[in-house]
Length: 256
Length: 300
Image (tube, rainbow over all chains, first blue to last red; front, side):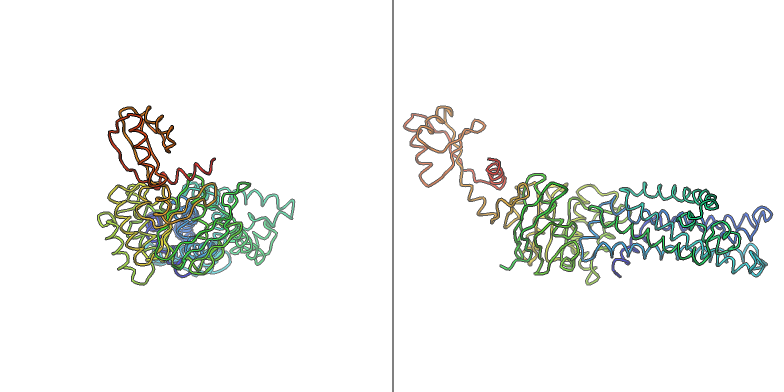
């Protein structure tokens, strides 16, 4: 397994897109920090901090692209046979890819967070991290928001990986991942309206896309989702595992 | 010699179509075995089954006495392969590909060696997306050989290679085989396979219809003499009348020697018929002819 993880990291490291995406994220974060410095009325530091100077959304996009391509490219380039004919099994190949994706997600989030801290110190040295936001210190709100986003990201990535096992080309898988990102966000908003009428609908996976919001603001979101926050967290993880398992079954059945 | 690869009773069905019917064969250590068959005969399926890439519907595969299946891959740790076409990551260089799959032990030496013997030094550090078909094929073969495996499985390795590269590959295979590496190679370029393989397996409709040494197969086809006369039509009729085994193919009289007296009998028959013989040339049966004969026999 260690060898497989090293191989996945090696491929990720040698993809120009990996570093270009990271650089793009950093540049965008710097750009929004400059806007916050020049136009503080329009680009409030607090709002930008909570969004990692837009880095949070970019982490989502980068990870969707990475998850989609990590599996689809092996079939597109015909490299899957080289991974599978060795002493390793499909399950090990699949898990090694998941581990590397998780490592990439954590790595990107660490960079986005570090950039947020650093940029805030530069553009607004007097920024108060202890000020109240959502009835708690802002730093705590920030950490909960980040943690919640990562949890929801895992759910989304499991869906993207599942879709990636169906596609023959990288580009199609990535495009579908991006479209899916917006569709699920819209679907979550629509379905939540129906939850009020048909309570059983609250268990659907789209509801779990609001887990991040509910972690930060449980009172407001509990009224919408009709689920307790620990239940939401459990269901989010449960659906992530379920979609990942289905993705593995799809990956295992796929002809090489 | 001890068999490194043993395949016995291998069956495979895709949907309702049975593509392999109880395939049995062995590959001895240090032997080069050519797997020959028409398109759709099941060559790639056999290779994929040996590599644990597809499930089978019965039969056994063993490499160095260890079983191989889609759920048993341990025996594949000393196997190198190129199946159908080389899998290449376009964003990586050739050297990075070799680095990716080479074992840690003596990685640099093995990579340097394979680059040198494959003649890839001039482009190994360029991105693989810029490679020609032949360069990609060489890289795929290099990936299969880089770890100096005990068994190498190559599916159409000569595809896209120029004549010099084909000769280089032949030399590499012979050198590695002398060092104890076993090869199972499928190829449509039978003349090349004939030059490199010790043994040959002929596959048709999922059955092994012939398994023998290359030499035995070629010799079994017998020797054919091409006879040129002043009047081939008359000569053909005279030879037929004298019960000499003769064919008129592409306006050429072909006499297949069935025993030592066949050619003598043919020449006597022609002299008696008053037909002047202009030339007699000996044509050895080759793998291609043997293959075509065997497949034709199967049809009839």
